[in-house]
Image 1 (cartoon, rainbow, N blue to C red):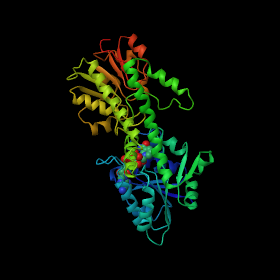
Image 2 (spheres, protein in one colour):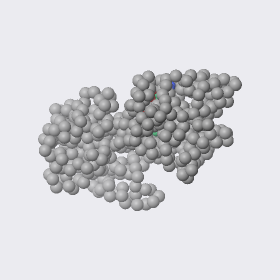
Image 3 (cartoon, rainbow, N blue to C red):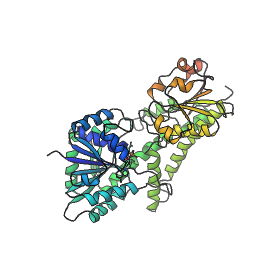
Image 4 (tube, rainbow, N blue to C red):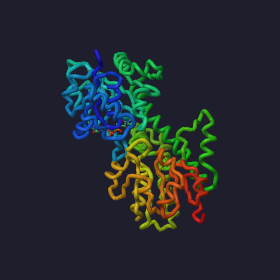
Length: 444
Ligand code: NAD
């Protein structure tokens, strides 16, 4: 019989997982507490941007293999497997992970499960959470049903979420029994049949793999960005440095792009939550380096703001600044903790007239920062601009040439916040270019 799967929490992770599980042939219901989101998804309307996902959503809503509900009772008596993909945002008080949504979803589910089931955590959680939740499930679910917990961290990347879900680069199963492992093997049979590496382990290792991966990636980005601070001071070419480093197979070139740093709904909160959790465990200094990683990352934003001031002769008030890109990364509309939006907002607060264009992120950015100007093209953003900031490396921006912007702008000044343009080409065309990791002399 076809496995019946529920996916609880239908945000970036959950909606993707639900649609991909339907694509793999399972019967799926997505559950969320957000009625508006559920209504839209039920109509095949994806509430966020993710390449390839709208097509899958429409296909499987139409086929009837994928449904959505706000009613836990509907899934408790129906699904064989319940994936938990609710949010674990940063807690304001101590920067730990806010587990209230995970706890609420487990409580609601436990109360409504009326048949044997496997509950599979996918949300990113502090180590120790799964073991605690297994206890909650055992205590709160009916004595006549067998409910087990597994932890299966998610490594999808926004922008590649469909591919990463259908063909992951590895699978990690944190399990307490062979039965749970066997069930997860059924779910991921296709990927396992394609020799996807599988790690079967305990809860704690599974939880730690996810945060360790994000801590490593954040560290790699801040590592090159720390060298940016050096090359900005002493001279040198950060891109060449990264290329040369990257040829070392032990290091690799990925995540060594110097720029305004990382953001989004995962890396920043995950490295903070890891520090908080490890301190709770009494390891007060173990993750201190992540504090530096975070600081280096945030200083990159200060650097772009300061470059903008320098390029406008320290009189930003009333000047027009075009911001190209506010999503935290290309191919996404996600502006959570976006360095680009932070920079745009700070320059607005300094008195600049900021006009933003992002191919997908404008609506989300407008909700967070309604006072910026939002337009629908590069040309409109650049019109009469005294300065252009390239802050998210969309292909559309990487392909820009001086001739594309020259007719619109008032000042031929540009900050390449992602180090993606051919600086020599722009300088030859008469532009003043500043970039992260590059020495900048305001006098030219
Ligand atoms: P999100 O904010 O987009 O989605 C979370 C969803 O959970 C929301 O739709 C919310 O309404 C819903 N929710 C909250 N409480 C609920 C409840 N009690 N019952 C049902 N639904 C509830 O977040 P996201 O980006 O999808 O991230 C979810 C988790 O996955 C986080 O732990 C995140 O760290 C992790 N993760 C995210 C990504 C990513 O790329 N976005 C990748 C890997 C892991």
